Each structure stands twice: as structure tokens, then as C-alpha cells.
Length: 236
Ligand code: ADP
Ligand code: MG
Image 1 (cartoon, helix red, strand yellow):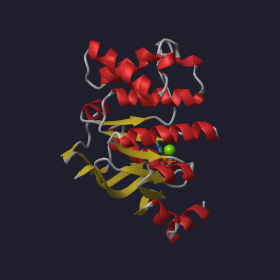
Image 2 (cartoon, protein in one colour; image 1 turned 45 degrees about the vertical axis):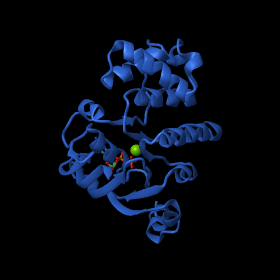
Image 3 (cartoon, rainbow, N blue to C red; image 1 turned 135 degrees about the horizontal axis):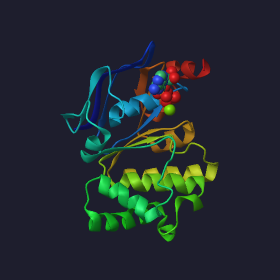
Image 4 (cartoon, rainbow, N blue to C red; image 1 turned 180 degrees about the vertical axis):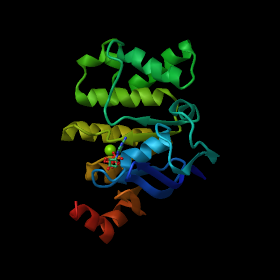
């Protein structure tokens, strides 16, 4: 059964159409990559799905329920969370406290939240630094903290927007491995990344947005050989 569906999603900003009649369906447990040239509408599509922005037209269904127009907080409670393109942890809180905030946002009470915070920091490999603050972290570790905060909310579906942005090759590989680990736990993953090789390696299916429209969907191999996709990128 589809865990996440978009139906005719459309978003305009004044005269600009950022997302144009996009429909898609993602099965429970799938890992799907979203690619497309700069400005194609990828981040906007994620904002429509996660409730940060409302579509002008179209619907979003989570677990078969219409969640269009609900707040990010309500959508998070229903099991979908998005990590941000730009990482912004609470600078004056420790990593443990940052993860706790995620767990409480997801609906856990305080004691439960502390336990969950320990679990997720362990999972992302930051537990040794639980009592330090984010300013002591490398860019790669900050991304892992962001992922830990998202996991702490107990999501069924995770959206990652350019989670490897700004990372070097080794840090990118670490993050991709971590996303693979998350997918292996049965969660549904929908991710945007411009590091094509990394995205293709972790995704079972790939969606391609170009000029606000979904122009192709398929396995990584099908996408890499798709003439329309090749043209969209060459024309960039
Ligand atoms: P991508 O993530 O694929 O690079 P975006 O979703 O960020 O693309 O942007 C898609 C288009 O929508 C771009 O032309 C961008 O300038 C425009 N856009 C995005 N957000 C806004 C906004 N808040 N106001 C006006 N235009 C926007
Ligand atoms: Mg973007």
C-alpha cells in the first residue's frame, strides 16, 4: 500500500510555477530519490508534502489519509518528518537535549524523550558527544545531528533535502551509509541530493523534476538511460 501520495500538486509564487501538477506514489519501506536541475521545484515539493507550504491545487495523502493543509507539527505526529537543507540545531542545547526536543515534538513525554534521545544519538554515531554543544561539531556531524532529531520523532516517512550538501566525499559516503541504515529499519525514505552517484546508490526508484514537472520515474538504471532526463541536465 502507498504510504505517501501526491495528487496533482501545484504551487505558484506570483507568476512563477514552482510545482506544476505533480502526482506520485511511494510504497511503504521504499527509498526514493528526487533529482532535477537547480530551481526545478524539489524543495518546494518537499515543503508541500511536509506542510510548510500549502499547495494552490492538489492533495497529499499519508497512509491513505488526506493531510493537505495540516501544519508540519500535525504531519509530524502522523509520521512524516523532513530534514532541512540548511541545518539549524539549538546552539545553546547539548546534542542530547537537541535530540530530546525532537522526541518531544514527536509526542513523547519527558522521560521517554530522554531515552529516545540516547537511542538516536547512538544510531547516528554521535553518542560520545551527547553532552557537547553543536558548535563543536563538523559539518558532517551536524548533518547527523539533524538526522538524529528527525529520527527522534519516530517517523514512518523521512524526507531528506540535500542532506549531503556541503560535505566532502568521505562525509557524503558516511551520510549515504546512514540513510541506508535507516532504510534497512523499514522506514520510507524520500531524498533530494545533487550528488548523483550517492543518490543513485541508495535509491530503489528515482523521480525527476524539471521545470516544475515530473518528467520521469524509474529505477536508477532506467533514469540514467532516459533521453529526456539526459536532455534536461545537458540543457542546464
Ligand atoms: P529546487 O529545490 O529544485 O532547487 P525550489 O523548490 O527551491 O527548487 O524552487 C523552485 C522555483 O520556485 C524557483 O524558481 C524558485 O526561485 C521559486 N521559489 C521557491 N520558493 C519561493 C518563494 N518563497 N517565493 C518565490 N519564489 C520561490
Ligand atoms: Mg532545493
